[in-house]
Length: 376
Image (cartoon, rainbow, N blue to C red; front, side):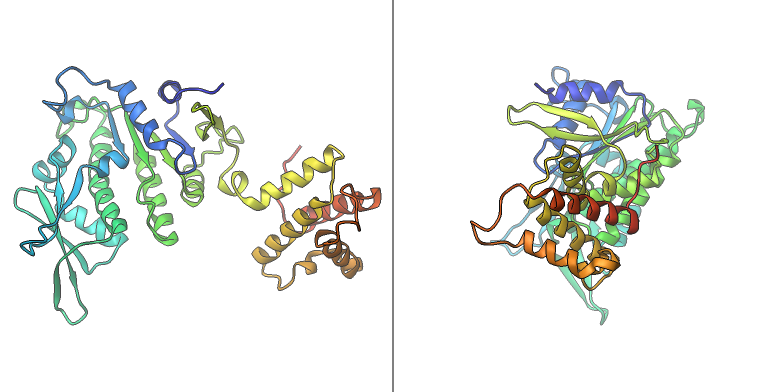
C-alpha cells in the first residue's frame, strides 16, 4: 500500500533540502501534488475565496496548471474584435504588473524563449494583453492569437519576473533593509513542469536559468521542482549538483499505483542513469544473467542494446561493436537467435553455450564501449 499525495506533501515539507527534484510521467499527479502541498503548508481559511489573501500572507509560491488557469482568452468573434488574453487579478500578477511595472521584463523573457518579433501589448490597467507579430518588412501583424505553447511561455515569463524579485529581496538578510516586506512569510517555491512546449535548446536554457536562480538564493527559501521531461530533470540535476557524492538527497521518482496510492522513491543519478531505455535493457539482461534465467528473447534485447549504442556512438552497423576476432560469428548468432520465425526450430531456453554468449557480449559492450561502471 502506497501513500496519499498529502503524505508525500508532508514528506516534502519535512525534508531539510534546499532543492527537491521530482520526476514523474504525465498523468501521475504532479499538479495535484502541488495543490496538496499548498493546502498543507497554507490551508484555506473560511472566507478566503471571497477575499483572497494578500501576497504578504503567502507561504508558498507555486507555478502549475492552476497558475495557467489565471489567464484565459476572450474572443469576440461576432464583432471581429481582437483576441485578448485576460489576466485574472490575483496577488501575484497585481504585484508584478501593477505595483512593480515588470511588463518590460516579462516581454524580454517571453521574446527570448519565442521570437523577438512576437510582442505582447498590455492594457493600461494590466487586465489583459494582446499580441502582434513584426514582419521582416517592418509591417506589423496585429491582434494575433498565439499558440498554446507560446501562451505557456508568456505565463512562465510573468512567474519568472516574480521569482527574480522574490529571491533578490529575500537575499537581503536584514529584514529592515528590504524594499518590501511582502515576501517575508514565503517559505517554499513549487514549480511544476515550466513551459514543457519548448524545443530542446530552449528547454536546456530554461533549466540552466532556473538552476541559476535557485543557486543565487541565499535565504532559507526552499524549492520543489517537478517535471515529466528527462532532459529538464537531467540538466537541473547536473546544474544543481544534486548527486552529493552518491547520496542523491532530494532526487525522487513519483509513481502512482493502480489502487490510487502513490510512492516517492529516491532516484540515483541524473536522467541518463535513471530513465534511459538502453539502460533498462542492460539491467534486464544483467539480471537474467545473475539469476541464470537467460531466455531466447534476451538475444533480441541484446541486439536492441547494441543497435542503440551503435547509433549513439555513430557506427554505421551495430555489428561493428562486436569483438573483432569473431565479429561475423557473433553477428550471425544474434541475428539467427533473435529473428527465428519457425515454431519448431528452437527451445525457449538457450543452450549453456548460448547463455554464455549473452554474458560475454554484454560484458564486452560494457567494458569496451565506455559504459559507466559503479566503483567498488
